[in-house]
Image (cartoon, rainbow, N blue to C red; front, side, top):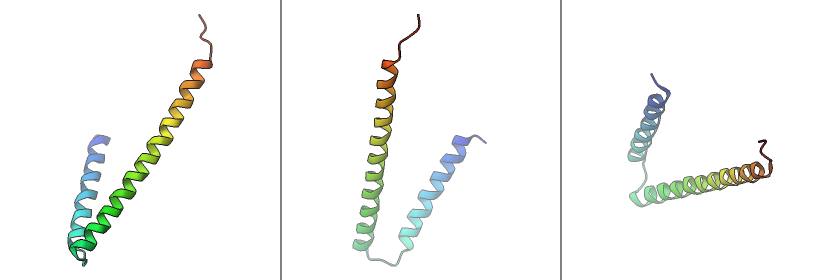
Amino acid sequence: MKASEFLAGLITGAVVGSVLGLLAAPKSGEELQNMVRARADLVMEEGRRAAAERRAELEAQFAHSKQIPLNS
């Protein structure tokens, strides 16, 4: 089994489990929507932060590589 197939199965299982857990939760529709919205906002913010950090790392590496002279 390829690692990508395993990862796809893991993600699919997590999504299905989350959806079933939310559907079985003893909360009202409005409470559930607010909870899901808050969680989605948190995940998106974490993704933006991680992307900004990675971009800064790559820009620093690029700037450093431009300073190193190439041997001809």
